[in-house]
Length: 173
Image (cartoon, rainbow, N blue to C red):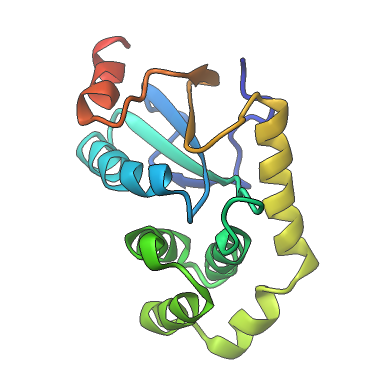
């Protein structure tokens, strides 16, 4: 399966997708235990390979299985409006095991967001549409669980929960 929505300026990106050997797109759910386990592995891989890897995170909240996933996605997206998407993304994943509304409220404070602006942004139709667009794009691309990865536009089933599986991407490029 191929990525139906190409990486664009509407995405949250670490690295330069125009020069990277690998553009890694993750469809993830902040409350998913598998995504939580993948988070430090993916982060380390991306941090250690910044010249060769661009990383994109897209929301795929599995609302039926994870009751706080949508609120977490909305919190991350509202943080993006204040230029703090990646900081919040990391904080949420570091707190994913005990994720709830109170935790998200604490993270808003910890990340240093303007709370009044945040309260407006987190409810905005624009923000909720962005999450829905990420989700729908994932469905159209064949995402049926999280985390799901795409490498250079193609669905990648090679992630097995280890650093080695990600490292193998670079050796195959």
